[in-house]
Length: 432
Image (cartoon, rainbow, N blue to C red; front, side):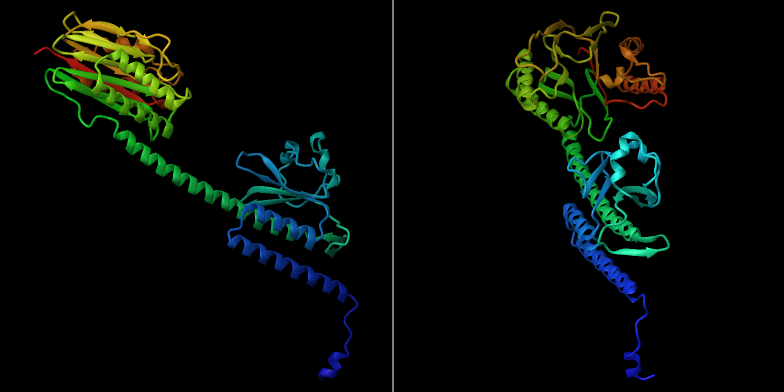
């Protein structure tokens, strides 16, 4: 058969249908290519949704559609819609979600509850999922006037499989963008936390005295990577020192920064004055100015003068400290007097310091992670149990006291995790 004979052959009677299908496939492939290029060029989500809308409305001539996407808040948000009422952006009904639709479904005759009646303007619902997770639902009109349609046994219908494929490409790409942003944010947060942790580690004294006449022991277990507890020992001269334990409200970087400011202020004030009332009032002012009332700090702070055998303290809303007088049969005094939390009011509504003459004693302080530890029955360890325990430990070495108390708390809570930071700070003074 020569070329002239081929030229005279007539096309089959259904050639128009083939031409239409070919044109539709060509449009679909071009649309996928354009969107894929846009994704590779890292175009923003809004631009991808605009291309998606243009492809369905202009190329496929869909006249009515809406797409609901599952967002990070676990709610279904309408991201694109057209051919719908102006106030269409409603939540996807729970009654529809409960149907667990996994394939393209005809909405006509589908039982819709009252909260889903606004979906009657559509014919189809097309689920979009990735790795068995439904990411979006596309609502469509099945027979757009003048649109590109496919013929099948039931008649002429929209190419819903292409709509599903196109939607999947767009939604998965956007989901990957979200995951990438989340990963970047997590890495940035991790770096911030590492920096804050390093800053926080510099707040604590590198060494603490531990000899026959002056022993100070600290134990610190942060609940998270960055804790909100703080302790310090600041020697003023050979015979006088400041001893402090504190707990900031909140956690994370803001708490670490506030505690850093507290430490810097305390150490600066300690070089300027030995007046404990003035130190605490100035600390309160600094915290109030920096935290603007959003965070506060509880603290127990004292100054001990070995020459005068004078112990002066202020408790600023902190857990009561334990003072055992070892020259008086280890008599226990709970140190609770002082003022309210620092940073909540400026000036402080009330404040007083208390002075005790003593030369042989054990001072035990802690943060509320100890007393608020809970058993499996959700019962708090509490102050009464701590008092009973400490009565058995007054003669014990400080390191052993801390070890025994942690073991006691672990035995009490069993498998129940700690809910807060744990800090223990003890001081034992013996006369020369």
